[in-house]
Length: 86
Image 1 (cartoon, rainbow, N blue to C red):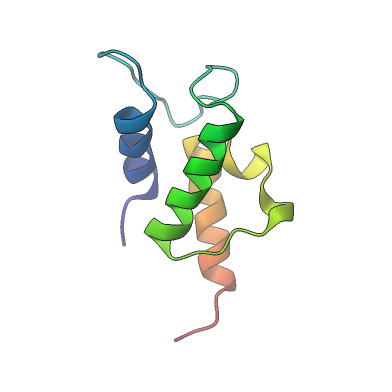
Image 2: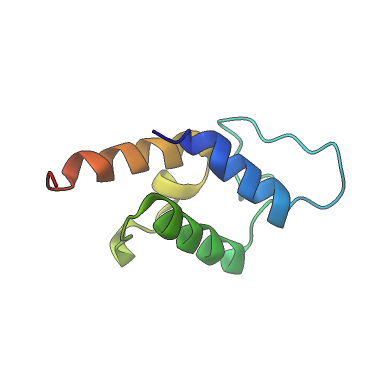
């Protein structure tokens, strides 16, 4: 299984971190740290859907699910647990 936090951290560093030496802790709020704006969150959600094979429902687009690496890891784990067995 792919390491969710590491994959998302790398996506953020590659696409949104301006300048070198940026670190993103597991519990860093993307909004409070000004890592993402509203457009960035849409890009992040699209990345998560494509990378982890999930469909994010509109009502799930909440900070509780997507505002930190830890929140995203928990969200992906819950979505995978809800998915029907293949």
